[in-house]
Length: 236
Image 1 (cartoon, rainbow, N blue to C red):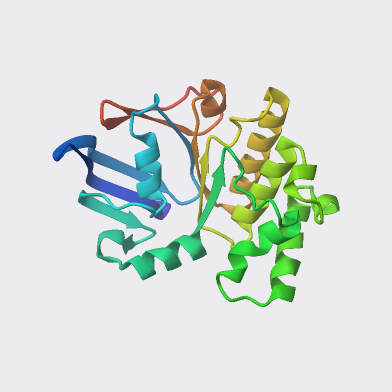
Image 2 (cartoon, rainbow, N blue to C red):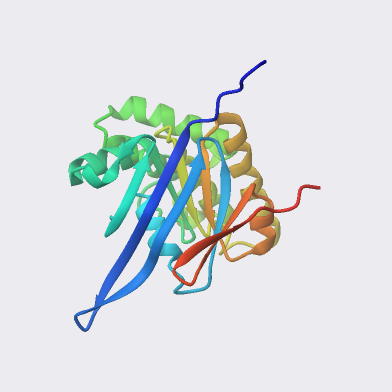
């Protein structure tokens, strides 16, 4: 009998809790969160404003720590990692995409994409070569030397995607990546992200309020009442 091994886990949250202090009183944001995401999966995270989805994203992205519980990131127990170790994990394994693009306005598209590689100490020539390759991958190499102000919203988001990819991440976290785009451009951006997920087996997590966008991802995870519930979309 052929035994097919289970795919490796990208993320594992076990009993994760997060609190904030308000007037010296702890306010619970997330309670007893349990979540596993396999490497290469793509899933949506949904929730109303203030539900805790941004807090969850910050924990998944190693920008914040859980107050209780355990978070394993590709086998690394992040609760035991030092701030410097977390910074290395972020730089080498994570790609972030934001609703507002977060591009440096005085840098060209090419230099924006190359920027994460400079933090690794990579030489400028090699960094620019890799950045141009990623711009070509997202169909924007012909605008490499343009500033963000000279690009459309969809083009800026493609630059942001190229920047997220340039470090060859294991996980891409996209926070409302289509929120500032018209429906046609939003569809193009989502198709691009799914193609990257499929071709490179990069784990993809998309935070969105758009149910139509979420329905096109394999998993839908709702942050509600300080915990998670999951709905698996019907397969056509």
